[in-house]
Each structure stands twice: as structure tokens, then as C-alpha cells.
Length: 610
Image 1 (cartoon, rainbow, N blue to C red):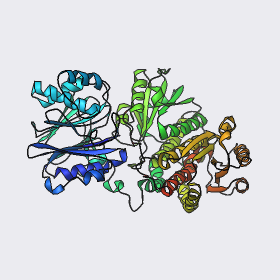
Image 2 (image 1 turned 90 degrees about the horizontal axis):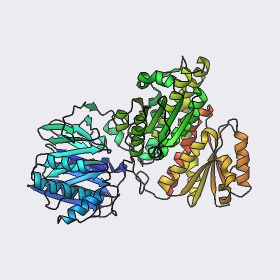
Image 3 (image 1 turned 60 degrees about the vertical axis):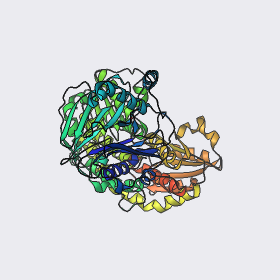
């Protein structure tokens, strides 16, 4: 969620901080602020709203400092306003902090501090932590020691930066349950919650682990645990480049990322698909291949769009490998004491690799003795580091909050995983080759869907005044109905629900009238005629039917008001194609309604708090 960046070096810090905040706007936020150490004093500027509103307060020419911290806030405690925006300071004004996460015991800490005579200006848990660190500093006269003492008492999660005018040559960073990356440059160092804030200055990074601190100065850095034990770190190189963080001529990142999908899916396949042998090579799973071969059950845990990908993966794996699969919301999995066995294999799916609920599910599964594997996009992320093995989806940075290319890359990787497991089991080489050949054709088939963009935009224009939508699909396309509805909700703010088409008669049909658009995913498969029957039921109640159908389908036009055609493929790969028109439909609806498409209200790209 929130974006954090701190810098010490030889550059003008104000430029580094503002650029960093702009790079991290996609994470989701409602206010922004900076604190720089200028002429032995801490100068803080913060503002509700977009980074551009904060920028209007900043006179860059008046700042020469080379050390400072900054933050974009997504409200948890206290309304979005100027006072609750970060940074926050202690009562003396000597210490400033920015914080991502939730301090669960902040109220008991606050009450104790009030009794000791300390005061508060905001409603945030973060100010409590700032005041507490300040109170401990008064006793210890050692900033690092005060931070360590405070964090040892904290219950909850944090990605934290601390700056003090009494120890002006350092910034202290720490993390627990919230990401923190250290950028290592030439006589300059950056701490941030996201590598996008770092790449402009260095590609050399260290990913901090839970309960780890980093102390940076112009002379270097040290890392240690919160209980003061030295740690060793590996320097990684950021895999993406700065050009991938630009819109590249598109009006929005979301549209750019939709049109990148032929490339990102190809990247997911490259080096892994041995089409001539009908085999899959997944080097990241080689160390657990026998565990997978002997697995009696696979559990997939994820949140949001990644959960929808997991549902498709369930169908794929059960069809090709015959292994029972269960798909769990990570937010429920972590609390319901799930029944797990040592020979279960748990896959955690997360674009960011930092999703708090999914990371907690990983910890729960590991505690129960399961083999835990990750399917993530961000190299070096927490889930990538804390699982036993895994697969990167190689989608590149996804800036639009509403996931598009990461979803289809997840589906692509899950199709490879299903074929990999199937060939381990009873799937023949001949069948493996047929599936592999179909996989190879997917990128080109996606390109052909883009030829219908103008038609999709016209449909969006016609229905942009609708207040509700229903999305229906069966089999492999039921999760696509869920994902299509989610996309519409996320960026257009139109209420939409996804259902299995057969479930329409069990309640949702009561909503259908002449004002209700109903989107059907009606591709050719063994239950195609069942979907046609469902469409007839909607027509009989005057509902407006928008159908996603295969090219060459002449029957569908008879029963639908609008048809968007996609190429035909085997059923297990259909979701990768059928979701593309739904992404475009949501995008163009939001465009018609003049929504903030890349940064929809109330949403964050990476949900790192509960």
C-alpha cells in the first residue's frame, strides 16, 4: 500500500523524494508528505490528495539538503487529511518518521504516553510510534537503540523510516510484514517500499527481511535484526528498466498493460515450453519435483484477481494431472485453522509477492509442515524469498492498480504447471504436444482480439449509464466472469457481480429487466448449448446480452444484442483469451465515465496491511 522513500547521498534530496513518490503513486494513497533535514532543522510538508498537490507546496530552489524521507499514505487510522498525513514527529520535533503498516497496540501505548505528559495532534497509530521513539530517545540518547526498543514493544506490522536532527547523518529503516528495499549506489543509498522508487538511481538492491533494520549514511550501510544481531545480505539486480515505468504513448498504464499481454505471456512461456516433446521445464520447481510427483492434494491460496487465477488453475490441474485442488482466500486461510497434511503442496499466488494475507497464509502452511511454493511477479519479494521454491511470471512492472497482464501471465504459468504435473502423472506425450502447440499460439490470438477494440468501446459507450452488470460463465469461464465483474467495479465504480451461469436461476435472475446488461462468456465447449439456454432466459426478461463468443459462431448473434468475437482454442486456455475483451470493456467504461483509471479510489496495488 503506502509508498515510502528515504535518501542520503550527494543529490538534492527534494528531487529524489518527489520522483520516488510519483513512481509509487500506483500503490494507492490519499495524502503525501516529505521531511528534509535543512540547515540543522527538520522541515515537513504534507498535504491531503495527490502528489501533485504536495508538489505545489514545494519550492525546490529553497532546498539544498541531501537527506530526507517521504511518504504516500493510504488511510487506516484517521481520516485522510493534512494532519493525519505522514511524516509524523515526536513531541520535541527532533524525530520524524514515515510508516506503512498497522500498530495494533497503539492505543495502549498512547494511553501510557498521555499519562506521562505526552501530547498528540493526529488520529494515527504512526504518531504514537513517533512519540514513543522520542520518549525512549530522551532516556537513551541513542537513536538506533531507541528505535530498536520501540519496535521490540510494537505489535503489528511496519515498514518504517526514522530521521533525526540530533543524529543528522543517518536514516534508520526497519520492516516487519511490510516491504522495504535498500538501493545501493555510489556514495548514495535509498530505502523504499518499492524498487520503482530506486531504479532511476541504482539497480543494485537488498531486500530486507522481517524484523530487520538498515542504517544508511553517506559512508555506507549496516543491516541487523531488531534485537541487534548483524545480518548478511545478497545484493540483487533489478530486472526491469525505467522505460517499463513509462506510459509509452498510451493514455493510461492500464491500456498499455492490456496491449502488452501478447509479449508478457510469451515471456512467461519462453525457455519453459518444450513443445516438440510436449514437456515443460520449470527450473524453479526442480528442488521439489518429487514432492509434486507424490502430492495427494494441492492447495492454492491468494487474494483478489490472483484468487480468480487460482480458480482457473484448479480446473487445469485437476483436468491434466488428476490431483485434487482446493482454492482458498488467503484472508480466510490464515485464521480458520485449515486442515493440512505434510504431503500437501500449497501454492501462494501474488503479483507483488507482498500481499499481507497471502504472506500470512504462507507462514501458516509452513508451520503445518507443508511444501509451500510461490507464483509471483516481483523478483526478490517476500513470498519469493519465504517459500520453498516457485515460479516467476515475468510480467514486468504492473503500474495500473487493476491487474491485467499479471492475471493472464498467472494463467499462462498455471497452464504450464498443469501440463508439467500432467506429464508427471498419466498425460501422454501426444496429448502434451497438442496442448503445447495450443499454448504457443496464444500470444498471436490475443493480438487479433485487439482488432475489436473499437467495437468494445462502442458497447461501453452504450451502457456507460448502467448502474449494475451481471457477468456469467460456466466451467473454465466462471472465474473469468468473476474477474470481468471485478475489473468493472474497480475502475468504473459500477456495481457488477459474477456468477456461474447455471446459478442465475437461484437468485440473480430476479434482478434482470430491460435496464440490466448481462455479459456472457459463451465460447464453444461441451456446455455451449447450456449457455445459449441461459441467454434465452435473460432475453425472455428483456435483459441486454453482451456475449463473448468464438469466431465463426453464427448462432450467438441470434440471441445476443452484442457479440465480441475471440479466436478458438482448447477450453483450458480459453480464459486467457476471453478475459481480454472484459478488460477492455471495463477500461472503456471507466474512460466514458472519466474515472481515475490507473489509481481508482480507495484501492491499493499491493495490500500490505490487513
